[in-house]
Image (cartoon, rainbow, N blue to C red; front, side, top):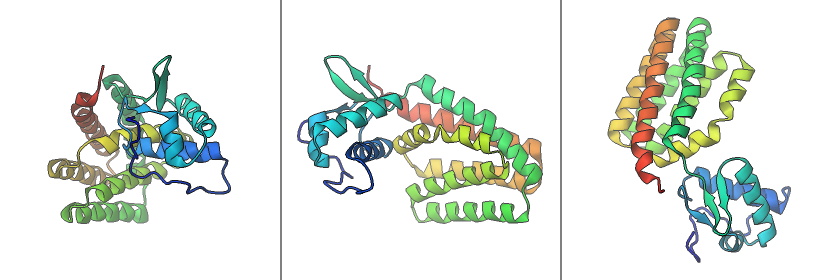
Amino acid sequence: MPKGRTHKGSRRGSFDVSLTRGEEAYRQIRSSILRGEFAPAESLSEYVLAAQLSLSRTPVREALTRLEQDGMVHTVAGRGTFVAQLTPHDVMEIYEVREQLESYAARVAAERMDTAGIGELERVIQKMHEGAAAGYANETFETDINLHKSILRATQNNRLIAILATLDDQMHRIRSMWPRTPRWLDGTLAEHESIVESIKKHDPGEAEAAMRKHLRSSCQHAIRFLMPMRTD
């Protein structure tokens, strides 16, 4: 990161007193990476981060060590610490796992979801339409996530939900970087409507296929827009 740069979203000296300084530094740096405020391959200087967070270098160093264990940063001997990049292979792996588990979840939801659950999905779709019509792309994005979570909850399979939760941070990074264009909004709305309609009809095969189609489309979108950002 260029010396002297102040990234947006940093909170100088704004700490939760219940947390250690290392934990607070970890949460703030992690949050900035997830929001895309630090770009892939961007250098993270201990000195600059410590100044931004009004901390000494020790808790910042602790935070960067934890983030490296999480796979969100990596350290190069003699060069420093950098935000981890996402490769095409990384993106494909993430979506392959999601496709297998979430398509199964859509099948189960079509078999089990009751009227109240379907009503919740329809309300989420309505919120997506309202957000898209108003040009609130970010809000529509968050509503998209809520719809997927609602379908997962319908499985009542806590282990499946927990496995997919391990991908949340990586998915957040992917989503934070791709453009929310009107074309993308229209396409993702249509895909989600197809999923919900299949669940509403209690058609497991169709719901599974609709979810697979949606996730494959999202994977292609992610690779198309994220990979030009890679640096070698």
